[in-house]
Image (tube, rainbow, N blue to C red):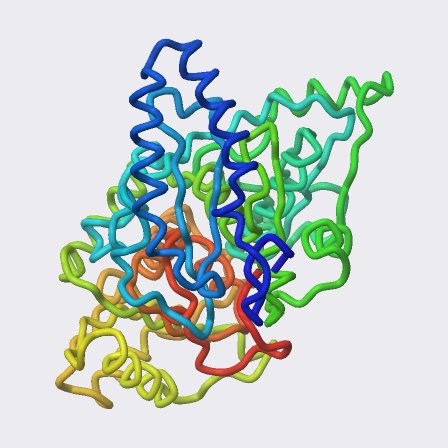
Length: 457
């Protein structure tokens, strides 16, 4: 962590008690709100005093807490400045998760409380959509993305933050761009008559991310007049911008994970890296409402509506060709038993299983017949595991069936009180940043250690 956030040794002062910076932000907000005539200065000061006084006990041990301070004056027109304290120590929990701060609800309890089953604008810390057309830099970032869904989404998140920090436009190209990796596109399809097509998969299930195609084509024409400089970043360049060099997807170093970042154009001023990514993702990754509603209805029908539950993420399928996989569900059972005692008061919760290999459901039920295991496998079938290379032969119906199932699984995993999975799939890293701002790191557990150790950053 940086100097103005508590270090692991407990030295330093966290940003939440940096009065000079707080006063500066307060004055900016007061001026903005008075100009809009929405709330009075007296009302604002009373609210701020309430937040400040209620947080004093919370900050009794600086080494346990970090602060998320979003200076979102530009669109928080009817709300006073919001302060959220977001403990994510991998070793230390707060005494009571409900003590986080006034106005911040307890962690979601079941699908009925999941942020992913409602509009992002209704979050305690609202997440309005991003205007991708407002970009003043001459740099134009072109994303020729390939690979699986969460592999793509992880790259998009990093490049979207890059573009926002540089005030650049970016475009996600789901069509063929040259011949390099052309057949590894999510939407690449082959037909028996030899015909090839590229379907727009992201646009099918999610709201627009990046420039729309007509705007991109217009700007591409403008590059001929040297108005824009197009950049095609590779994995190394993306890692350089996100991690500051070649970086592992996990880290044990709090100075790396919680370094402060700013995107002034979006109102993020000195926000720690983890919280910024989570809130930015919530603004960027917007599941189309019919798809979202269908997924949440499926999850509700499985008995996850109003109670805390545990998520188990099992990836098999074509992963066996890339890395060693866990051949039994035993490690998941062992970690689940630990979590039951630590976080569920000894009562076995419902187990939500997210998997590309539906055969694991019987394995779990044989191992613990008295536990309740539910899954989207009850609504779909992928008995032999997901194999990416087979997608090119899928019909439209098969494509929808797979991604509707996967989106429901993403929401189910992100909304669980406790998550258990492996570090060998991009799914895990995406789910980590989908989890709420107040989710604890000790409720995100690897069943096997990552190569570099640590947690996503």
